[in-house]
Structure formats: structure tokens, C-alpha cells
Image 1: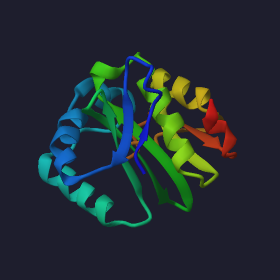
Image 2 (image 1 turned 90 degrees about the vertical axis):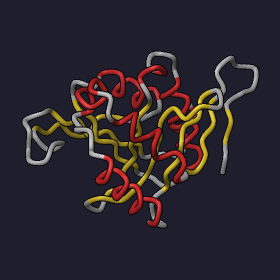
Image 3 (image 1 turned 60 degrees about the horizontal axis):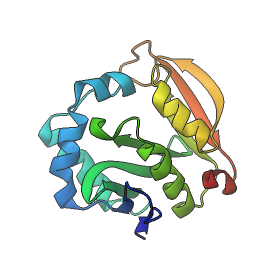
Length: 170
């Protein structure tokens, strides 16, 4: 299930299943205050984070992949079911922002996961992630306010959907 980007590129991107040894690195990534602000997901404490990921890793219906850039853990991407929707979500460590990593990673992931439709919920202020979703073939379906945070926080939430398997070939 490991996929690699074209070896002629300077940046090597790999997707592989998340392992327990990735969790301390992913924990540190999610503590980045700028990432938390942009995504509207507050950082979790270590115990809550580890408990959350233990559930993920034990759930056979979840596809959870570690994003590896030049042999270093750079983030994660996953697919799960919530409220009857198959959802996709990801985050990339800040040092990889603006380099095309997220677009390449999501394109690779969409080739691995053939289920459609997939829904992506994104904070309206997260323009970089919105661009990634649109480049990968997602289209805006719905705008809501206050649904991302718990309790409702008044943040605009955009719901993007991809309906076809070929759209990930961007």
C-alpha cells in the first residue's frame, strides 16, 4: 500500500500506513499553534491524542496513512465515516507548506482510496487547503457556520466533495 512520487522529482513523497512510532511526531505536528488556528482544530493533550489515535489504528474502516517527505514523517492523511459520510482529512507539518506536498499527497491518496463520494470539511479561512482540494478535483457543496468546533464556534466551514475516481489524477 506504499506509494511513491516520481523519483525524478527533488522531493520524495511516500504514503504508508500510520504506525505507533509515528504518533509522537504527529502529536508534535498537531501542537503547532498556526496549524491549529488555520484548521480550527485545537491541539490535544498527549493522553487525549494517543487515545484518539489508538481508536483510529484499531478501526478497520479507517484508512490512515503517514505522509513521508524525503524519509521524514511530514503529516498524515486519512479517510473515515462520520454522520453517514465518507470523509477525508489531512495535515502537513509547517516546514512542508507551500511546496506542493499536500497536493501531491492528496492526489496519491485519492488513487489509493477508490470510495466515492468523499467529503472534506475545511475551515473557510484555510485558503491553502481549499486550493489543494480544488486542484485535486473536489468541488464546494455547502457552507455552514459553527460546525467545526465543539461547541459551535462560529467559524465558517466549507464542505467539499469529490464524486469520481478520476478526479484524483490531477
